Length: 437
Image 1 (cartoon, rainbow, N blue to C red):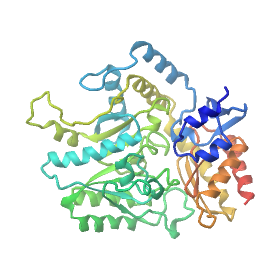
Image 2 (tube, one colour):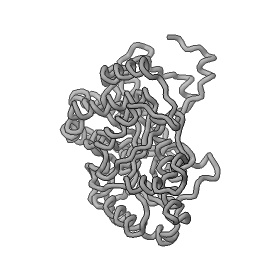
Image 3 (spheres, one colour):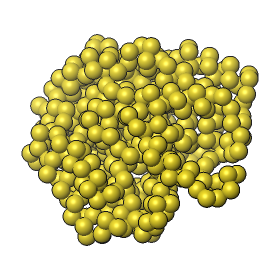
Image 4 (cartoon, rainbow, N blue to C red):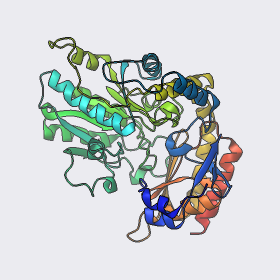
């Protein structure tokens, strides 16, 4: 299929250097299994599972058949004041993957929407509890929580924030990368003490003014940053001590990437609210969700308003879209049927060994990994931290390998069924690309 110049001009692409791309387009036309095909007919290994989305691979028969059947049965249903069977079925299935106690599911259209929903639930919860002053949020430097105004406010990636003026007020914890824990394999041993900063921030704001802390259990888009051992446990205990809600953004961590149903399960810490998306439908149909403890949900239901009035005036046209629900049911069923979490845990040590072999190259300044996720920090060009990752990612593309570049990092997250020889080819190509520098 030929794309005309007018078509190129018409599309303003997201998170893309549009000027560079339109001079040297990279067009994907097909996908199957763990591979893409580009417009030149080249087979491209998918080293990021789409955008952390397609852990089960591409063109999965069971998911596609579920979508086709749903479209032929019920293509759209109003999400306000009316329901359809699959939304309730999917909500119950999601709770079987969630930490104990998180058993109420609010559907959204994406991970960004799920974060907005979680933030609104947190504030509204305290209003309903008679504590409306508890409205402040605390995020973390390098945190990524989508791109809506609430998400970039609590998020801590500077380039996602600085262009957009006044944001929602939020404080930010320090990131957990330290000189002591660079090149750690899995969770770093050092750095739990960084959680103590949360105590200081809450005390400076006054616990009576703080609604919630929001963190990714493992930061993904910032370049795969696992939490130091003991860090999340201490965050949880501080939140408990000050009656502050804890939100885990599991849009990347959740549903298999770390080898567990959630980052919460992987690290043994349960939040009050959790957001998911991406792997929920294997990336085939946009969908997200905020999952909350029943004790939070019940505060909204304990209302003196007439029973037909809205308990939570929030939602999206595409909340619990029937086609997305069908995809979600099929995707989550396959995670169980194919024993995906165990498969990830089995292949993760090989992935870890291969990615840490890259430490030998002088341009590599840090490597981090957990499950089937790895991040490589590269030495900056003067005043151009994003340039070298871009150059290496383009070399990888030329070699038939798709990886993500973001900030000063290369990010790798292959499909859950990846084979050792596919990892070998991926890392051999990356070695060859690093040698150029």
